[in-house]
Amino acid sequence: MQVVTAKVKKKPLLDLVADQIPKLVLSPTILMTVVFIYGYVIWTGVLSFTKSSFLPNYKFAGTLQYEKLFENDRWGVAVDNLFVFGGLFILICLALGIFIAILLDQRIRAEGAIRTVFLYPMALSFIVTGTAWKWILNPSLGLERLVKDMGFENFTFDWLVNTDMAIYTLVIAAVWQSSGFVMALFLAGLRSIDSSIIKAAQIDGASLPKIYLRIILPSLRPVFFSAFIILCHIAIKSFDLVKALTNGGPGYSTDLPATFMYAFSFTRGQIGLGSASAMMMLAGVLAILIPYLYSELRGTRNA
Image (tube, rainbow, N blue to C red; front, side, top):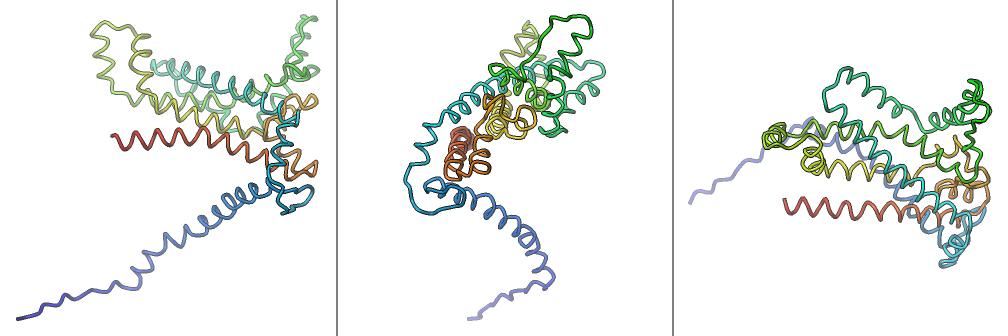
Protein backbone atom coordinates (compact mmCIF):
# COMPACT_ATOMS: atom_id res chain seq x y z
CA MET A 1 0.00 0.00 0.00
CA GLN A 2 1.44 3.33 -1.03
CA VAL A 3 1.22 6.12 1.55
CA VAL A 4 0.82 9.57 0.06
CA THR A 5 2.09 12.36 2.25
CA ALA A 6 1.05 15.91 1.46
CA LYS A 7 3.79 18.44 1.60
CA VAL A 8 2.92 21.46 3.74
CA LYS A 9 4.21 24.55 2.08
CA LYS A 10 5.57 27.01 4.61
CA LYS A 11 4.66 30.66 4.26
CA PRO A 12 7.50 33.06 3.59
CA LEU A 13 8.60 35.13 6.59
CA LEU A 14 7.40 38.37 5.01
CA ASP A 15 3.89 36.94 4.56
CA LEU A 16 3.79 35.89 8.21
CA VAL A 17 4.83 39.39 9.27
CA ALA A 18 2.24 40.94 6.94
CA ASP A 19 -0.48 38.77 8.53
CA GLN A 20 0.42 40.06 11.99
CA ILE A 21 0.71 43.76 11.09
CA PRO A 22 -3.06 44.54 11.50
CA LYS A 23 -3.02 42.96 14.97
CA LEU A 24 0.15 44.85 15.93
CA VAL A 25 -1.29 48.16 14.73
CA LEU A 26 -4.62 47.68 16.50
CA SER A 27 -3.31 46.24 19.76
CA PRO A 28 -2.23 49.59 21.35
CA THR A 29 -5.66 51.08 20.58
CA ILE A 30 -7.43 48.05 22.03
CA LEU A 31 -5.21 48.12 25.11
CA MET A 32 -5.80 51.85 25.70
CA THR A 33 -9.56 51.42 25.17
CA VAL A 34 -9.70 48.62 27.73
CA VAL A 35 -7.61 50.53 30.28
CA PHE A 36 -8.81 54.13 29.85
CA ILE A 37 -12.50 53.47 29.14
CA TYR A 38 -13.59 50.16 30.63
CA GLY A 39 -10.90 50.24 33.33
CA TYR A 40 -11.95 53.70 34.52
CA VAL A 41 -15.62 52.76 34.37
CA ILE A 42 -14.90 49.87 36.73
CA TRP A 43 -12.76 52.12 38.95
CA THR A 44 -15.53 54.75 39.10
CA GLY A 45 -17.99 52.02 40.04
CA VAL A 46 -15.68 50.86 42.86
CA LEU A 47 -15.24 54.44 44.16
CA SER A 48 -19.00 54.93 44.24
CA PHE A 49 -19.22 52.29 46.99
CA THR A 50 -16.49 53.85 49.14
CA LYS A 51 -16.13 56.83 51.48
CA SER A 52 -13.83 58.63 49.02
CA SER A 53 -13.76 62.36 49.53
CA PHE A 54 -10.87 64.55 48.35
CA LEU A 55 -8.73 61.49 47.52
CA PRO A 56 -9.77 57.90 46.72
CA ASN A 57 -10.47 55.83 49.81
CA TYR A 58 -11.14 52.13 49.31
CA LYS A 59 -13.00 51.53 52.56
CA PHE A 60 -16.30 49.91 51.57
CA ALA A 61 -19.33 52.04 52.49
CA GLY A 62 -22.15 50.13 50.84
CA THR A 63 -24.77 52.31 49.18
CA LEU A 64 -23.99 55.37 51.33
CA GLN A 65 -22.99 57.57 48.38
CA TYR A 66 -26.13 56.65 46.45
CA GLU A 67 -28.30 57.48 49.47
CA LYS A 68 -26.55 60.86 49.80
CA LEU A 69 -26.99 61.41 46.07
CA PHE A 70 -30.75 60.89 46.07
CA GLU A 71 -31.11 63.10 49.19
CA ASN A 72 -29.20 65.92 47.47
CA ASP A 73 -31.51 68.68 46.23
CA ARG A 74 -29.02 69.74 43.57
CA TRP A 75 -29.05 66.24 42.07
CA GLY A 76 -32.86 66.40 41.94
CA VAL A 77 -32.64 69.70 40.04
CA ALA A 78 -30.05 68.21 37.65
CA VAL A 79 -32.25 65.18 36.89
CA ASP A 80 -35.35 67.35 36.38
CA ASN A 81 -33.35 69.61 34.07
CA LEU A 82 -32.16 66.57 32.12
CA PHE A 83 -35.76 65.50 31.47
CA VAL A 84 -36.76 69.03 30.39
CA PHE A 85 -33.63 69.69 28.33
CA GLY A 86 -33.36 66.17 26.88
CA GLY A 87 -37.06 65.86 26.08
CA LEU A 88 -37.34 69.21 24.30
CA PHE A 89 -33.95 68.85 22.62
CA ILE A 90 -34.76 65.42 21.18
CA LEU A 91 -38.33 66.24 20.13
CA ILE A 92 -37.48 69.56 18.46
CA CYS A 93 -34.36 68.17 16.74
CA LEU A 94 -36.30 65.22 15.34
CA ALA A 95 -39.27 67.32 14.21
CA LEU A 96 -37.12 70.08 12.70
CA GLY A 97 -34.65 67.64 11.12
CA ILE A 98 -37.43 65.57 9.47
CA PHE A 99 -39.24 68.70 8.28
CA ILE A 100 -36.12 70.20 6.66
CA ALA A 101 -35.16 66.84 5.15
CA ILE A 102 -38.60 66.49 3.53
CA LEU A 103 -38.36 70.03 2.12
CA LEU A 104 -34.90 69.36 0.68
CA ASP A 105 -36.12 66.05 -0.72
CA GLN A 106 -38.34 68.02 -3.12
CA ARG A 107 -35.20 68.72 -5.23
CA ILE A 108 -35.42 72.47 -4.64
CA ARG A 109 -32.94 74.94 -6.07
CA ALA A 110 -29.79 75.76 -4.08
CA GLU A 111 -30.22 72.51 -2.16
CA GLY A 112 -26.46 72.19 -1.69
CA ALA A 113 -26.16 75.68 -0.19
CA ILE A 114 -29.12 75.19 2.14
CA ARG A 115 -27.81 71.80 3.25
CA THR A 116 -24.43 73.36 4.03
CA VAL A 117 -26.04 76.14 6.07
CA PHE A 118 -27.90 73.62 8.25
CA LEU A 119 -24.92 71.28 8.57
CA TYR A 120 -22.39 74.01 9.37
CA PRO A 121 -23.18 74.17 13.14
CA MET A 122 -22.12 70.52 13.43
CA ALA A 123 -18.59 71.63 12.51
CA LEU A 124 -18.47 73.70 15.70
CA SER A 125 -17.86 72.38 19.17
CA PHE A 126 -20.44 72.89 21.91
CA ILE A 127 -17.98 75.27 23.59
CA VAL A 128 -18.06 77.58 20.55
CA THR A 129 -21.84 77.22 20.24
CA GLY A 130 -22.33 78.01 23.92
CA THR A 131 -20.06 81.06 23.77
CA ALA A 132 -21.80 82.42 20.65
CA TRP A 133 -25.29 81.98 22.13
CA LYS A 134 -24.11 83.51 25.40
CA TRP A 135 -23.36 86.72 23.49
CA ILE A 136 -26.62 86.54 21.50
CA LEU A 137 -28.80 86.01 24.60
CA ASN A 138 -26.94 88.41 26.88
CA PRO A 139 -29.57 91.09 27.80
CA SER A 140 -27.03 93.92 27.71
CA LEU A 141 -25.20 92.90 24.52
CA GLY A 142 -27.28 90.64 22.30
CA LEU A 143 -30.82 90.25 21.02
CA GLU A 144 -32.51 92.35 23.71
CA ARG A 145 -30.08 95.24 23.22
CA LEU A 146 -30.52 95.04 19.41
CA VAL A 147 -34.32 95.21 19.56
CA LYS A 148 -34.24 98.08 22.08
CA ASP A 149 -31.88 100.01 19.82
CA MET A 150 -34.43 99.56 17.04
CA GLY A 151 -36.91 101.54 19.12
CA PHE A 152 -38.76 98.83 21.06
CA GLU A 153 -37.72 100.03 24.53
CA ASN A 154 -40.09 97.70 26.43
CA PHE A 155 -38.76 94.53 24.81
CA THR A 156 -37.18 92.08 27.26
CA PHE A 157 -35.56 88.72 26.65
CA ASP A 158 -33.70 87.80 29.83
CA TRP A 159 -33.94 84.02 29.72
CA LEU A 160 -30.18 83.68 30.24
CA VAL A 161 -30.39 85.30 33.70
CA ASN A 162 -33.88 84.06 34.58
CA THR A 163 -33.82 81.09 36.96
CA ASP A 164 -37.05 79.61 35.56
CA MET A 165 -36.20 80.10 31.88
CA ALA A 166 -32.41 79.60 31.70
CA ILE A 167 -32.73 75.86 30.98
CA TYR A 168 -34.54 76.71 27.73
CA THR A 169 -31.53 78.68 26.49
CA LEU A 170 -29.63 75.36 26.55
CA VAL A 171 -32.39 73.83 24.41
CA ILE A 172 -32.15 76.68 21.86
CA ALA A 173 -28.38 76.36 21.50
CA ALA A 174 -28.39 72.55 21.40
CA VAL A 175 -31.16 72.42 18.78
CA TRP A 176 -29.29 74.95 16.63
CA GLN A 177 -26.21 72.74 16.84
CA SER A 178 -27.73 69.30 16.22
CA SER A 179 -30.87 69.65 14.07
CA GLY A 180 -28.75 69.83 10.89
CA PHE A 181 -27.21 66.47 11.74
CA VAL A 182 -30.66 64.90 12.11
CA MET A 183 -31.66 66.51 8.80
CA ALA A 184 -28.65 64.90 7.08
CA LEU A 185 -29.52 61.46 8.50
CA PHE A 186 -33.14 61.62 7.31
CA LEU A 187 -32.23 63.15 3.95
CA ALA A 188 -29.86 60.24 3.30
CA GLY A 189 -32.66 57.85 4.31
CA LEU A 190 -35.19 59.57 2.05
CA ARG A 191 -32.83 59.41 -0.92
CA SER A 192 -32.32 55.66 -0.40
CA ILE A 193 -36.02 54.80 -0.82
CA ASP A 194 -36.97 53.11 -4.07
CA SER A 195 -38.72 55.71 -6.25
CA SER A 196 -40.93 53.01 -7.83
CA ILE A 197 -42.78 52.63 -4.52
CA ILE A 198 -43.60 56.34 -4.51
CA LYS A 199 -44.68 56.26 -8.16
CA ALA A 200 -46.95 53.29 -7.48
CA ALA A 201 -48.59 55.15 -4.59
CA GLN A 202 -49.07 58.23 -6.79
CA ILE A 203 -50.70 56.11 -9.49
CA ASP A 204 -53.08 54.77 -6.83
CA GLY A 205 -54.09 58.37 -6.12
CA ALA A 206 -52.28 58.94 -2.81
CA SER A 207 -51.39 62.55 -2.05
CA LEU A 208 -47.80 63.56 -1.26
CA PRO A 209 -48.41 64.17 2.50
CA LYS A 210 -50.14 60.77 2.76
CA ILE A 211 -47.24 59.08 0.94
CA TYR A 212 -44.77 60.56 3.43
CA LEU A 213 -46.89 59.76 6.50
CA ARG A 214 -48.06 56.26 5.52
CA ILE A 215 -45.16 54.90 3.42
CA ILE A 216 -41.90 56.83 3.51
CA LEU A 217 -41.52 57.85 7.17
CA PRO A 218 -42.53 54.42 8.59
CA SER A 219 -39.86 52.83 6.38
CA LEU A 220 -37.26 55.10 7.98
CA ARG A 221 -37.69 53.53 11.42
CA PRO A 222 -33.99 52.48 11.66
CA VAL A 223 -32.91 56.07 10.86
CA PHE A 224 -35.31 57.37 13.49
CA PHE A 225 -33.92 55.04 16.16
CA SER A 226 -30.32 55.89 15.22
CA ALA A 227 -31.04 59.62 15.50
CA PHE A 228 -32.91 59.08 18.77
CA ILE A 229 -30.05 57.12 20.33
CA ILE A 230 -27.43 59.69 19.26
CA LEU A 231 -29.52 62.61 20.56
CA CYS A 232 -30.13 60.81 23.87
CA HIS A 233 -26.40 60.26 24.19
CA ILE A 234 -25.70 63.95 23.51
CA ALA A 235 -28.33 65.05 26.04
CA ILE A 236 -27.10 62.81 28.86
CA LYS A 237 -23.42 63.71 28.47
CA SER A 238 -24.00 67.44 27.88
CA PHE A 239 -21.34 69.31 29.81
CA ASP A 240 -19.38 71.74 27.63
CA LEU A 241 -22.50 73.53 26.36
CA VAL A 242 -23.67 74.17 29.93
CA LYS A 243 -20.22 75.35 31.07
CA ALA A 244 -19.92 77.76 28.14
CA LEU A 245 -23.48 79.10 28.10
CA THR A 246 -24.70 79.26 31.71
CA ASN A 247 -22.02 77.57 33.83
CA GLY A 248 -24.88 75.83 35.62
CA GLY A 249 -26.46 79.13 36.71
CA PRO A 250 -28.16 81.27 37.76
CA GLY A 251 -27.36 79.48 41.03
CA TYR A 252 -27.53 75.83 39.97
CA SER A 253 -30.79 76.17 38.03
CA THR A 254 -29.28 74.79 34.78
CA ASP A 255 -27.24 72.00 36.32
CA LEU A 256 -27.27 68.71 34.44
CA PRO A 257 -25.95 65.37 35.78
CA ALA A 258 -22.61 65.85 34.00
CA THR A 259 -22.00 69.27 35.57
CA PHE A 260 -23.15 67.93 38.95
CA MET A 261 -20.62 65.09 38.67
CA TYR A 262 -17.81 67.50 37.75
CA ALA A 263 -18.65 69.95 40.55
CA PHE A 264 -18.72 67.33 43.30
CA SER A 265 -15.78 65.25 42.04
CA PHE A 266 -13.28 67.98 41.19
CA THR A 267 -14.27 71.21 42.97
CA ARG A 268 -16.04 70.05 46.15
CA GLY A 269 -13.74 67.12 46.94
CA GLN A 270 -16.50 64.47 47.11
CA ILE A 271 -15.20 61.85 44.70
CA GLY A 272 -17.46 59.11 46.09
CA LEU A 273 -20.60 61.18 45.53
CA GLY A 274 -19.39 62.28 42.10
CA SER A 275 -18.68 58.65 41.17
CA ALA A 276 -22.18 57.63 42.24
CA SER A 277 -23.66 60.33 39.98
CA ALA A 278 -21.43 59.16 37.11
CA MET A 279 -22.68 55.59 37.55
CA MET A 280 -26.27 56.82 37.47
CA MET A 281 -25.50 58.56 34.17
CA LEU A 282 -24.05 55.31 32.84
CA ALA A 283 -27.20 53.49 33.97
CA GLY A 284 -29.26 56.02 32.01
CA VAL A 285 -27.24 55.43 28.86
CA LEU A 286 -27.46 51.65 29.25
CA ALA A 287 -31.22 51.85 29.84
CA ILE A 288 -31.51 53.31 26.35
CA LEU A 289 -28.81 51.29 24.58
CA ILE A 290 -29.64 47.77 25.82
CA PRO A 291 -33.27 47.68 24.54
CA TYR A 292 -32.07 49.18 21.25
CA LEU A 293 -29.30 46.60 20.81
CA TYR A 294 -31.70 43.81 21.81
CA SER A 295 -34.22 44.91 19.18
CA GLU A 296 -31.46 45.17 16.56
CA LEU A 297 -30.10 41.67 17.33
CA ARG A 298 -33.60 40.23 17.38
CA GLY A 299 -34.33 41.81 14.00
CA THR A 300 -31.08 40.38 12.57
CA ARG A 301 -31.92 36.87 13.77
CA ASN A 302 -35.45 37.03 12.35
CA ALA A 303 -34.21 38.37 8.99
